[in-house]
Amino acid sequence: MRSGLREQYDVWVTGIGLVTPLGIGVPAFVDGLAAQRSGLRRLEGEAWAATGADVAGVAPEISALDLLPRTEARSVDRFVLMALAAADEALGDAKLTVGQDVAADRVAVVVSTGAGGLATYEEQAVARASRGRAAVSPYLLPGMLPNMAAARIAIRHGVRGLSSSIATACAAGAMSVAEGLRLIREGTADVVICGGTDTALAPSVATSFGNARALARAGTGDPAAASRPFDLDRSGFVLSEGAGILVLERAAHARARSAHAYGRVLGWGATSDAHHPTSPRPDGEGAADAMRRALADAGLSPRDIGYVNAHGTGTKVGDLAEARAVRSVFGEDGPPVSSVKGAIGHLLGAAGAVEAAATVLALHHRSLPATANLDRPDPACALDHVRGAPRAAAPEAAVSNSFAFGGHNVSLVLGTAPGAA
Image (tube, rainbow, N blue to C red; front, top):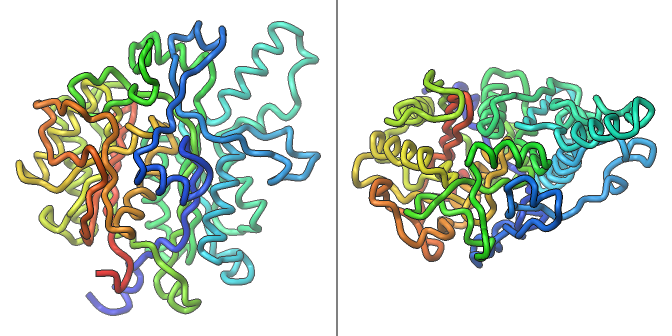
């Protein structure tokens, strides 16, 4: 490959920001996974009891007044606040100020969500039903629209390039990272602030998932043990909330300002199952094809991959289909596999971004996170599971998977930082 073309395709991760049930900030996330802490807790109160959900991954509170002028603080949903907090951390981590370290029109924002401001919508619908028209806030739409996380980040940081949000449900965060890679490769941007944010902790959403029997329940047991990816006793996923933002940067731009890199985004692949609105293809071939396309885009073969960060939600059909997909691509002696959803639950539209960050951080720290609560691996999901404790390892490349309702499959290939091998 010519040096100019190689440079065009070299994209670094120079900043990471996270808000998860393990806490605010990257250190809380990394330390929590390393110590095998859980971010899941029991839901209390009559409103939750009526939903059928009794456990969730709840992120810490974020003050709107710390992020927005007082006149605007009441007009944003929590999914926006989490994205703003994560973006602030990511840009600070990258030591990058828009307009100073990079031209404002050479920065893009791609921050997606699965549910958007559903909690705000539900509150306002209840207010209208109980108190009438006057109770509805004039800020309802700008508070709940799915594009508002990306828009608010662009406004806060003076970004004048493209800003957008992608609606691919639980694959949205990963698709945002893929889009960030594409925008840099095609020359549209030098820097992309990308990721996902979501909070679906609204009673109507929990009730819907509960009625569909998709949610795991704690019952009288330990809520920390409810999310059990690939375990024989798994019974569904745990609703959670959070945000993950990555700063992607053209290598030449990052190098010119002596930026630090956590790793690289090497490739991406996306497919559609064309099978069912909510269930994956049982044979996992849609997911497998996404991984194959991502490897081809990265110019790598299956044997080059030393870790797979699985979508691994803890549902019976989803985990089985993914295990089949991983074996289809990597064979019976494939790389180590784990899912962080055992510790933090399912962050829906934020999951793919948070898990891409987890994968980059695993490569950076040379430590693969364990799948929490994987006490009895399902023989039908036979893989080289990382369980019991993090595993010391130094792979040079890894795959992060995200799959979604509608049959959206997205796989990212991530690599070590320049000079890290």
